[in-house]
Image (tube, rainbow, N blue to C red; front, side):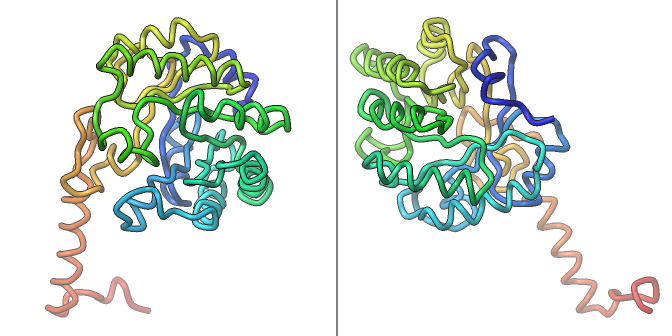
Length: 261
């Protein structure tokens, strides 16, 4: 049974499992595995569309993938990322959220930023749109943060991230993602907030954890951040299978009588 926003609002300490998935087959597997929530992240731009960052991802691309993931996981809580600049103003944020929820089938949207987006989060929440916040490393603006690196190591950075998370809660967010921050900072934020925190590269003290499907099963090349644990070397296994297929076709082994009518 699909969880509700109310359940997530009262999910402190429950060790929830989020997984980022981008399409029908991966969302289907995520649901069968029993995850609590699926995120259709704009990281799909890099992982499945081949972009160099998340910045080029459009609302139409997010909508396309959100629809597919919903078809694959009809009974799992589904969050969709608002792509870069789609929430630059409240009107734009409402437009994007309406499409992702009404057309895409998402249960909630996620956006990046702290105090600077609190007003947008408040407007979305007041309109009835469930919002998942995201602080720490924010990939859409990673260049401004010095690249894909740990955030919150310096006291002023940690203070900014903490204040941002608290501002998101006050604005009405039902939860906050903490990405690539020191585990002690994540622990402090988790203890200070009444809403649940979702960690990725943030240690073990958050209320939930999230990883990307392709990272979990080893389908994103040699890219393997320190916080990722691979549970399968999928790329190697897939390549072996495909290579065998190529070989058998060229040698006349496939198709055999078993695969013919």
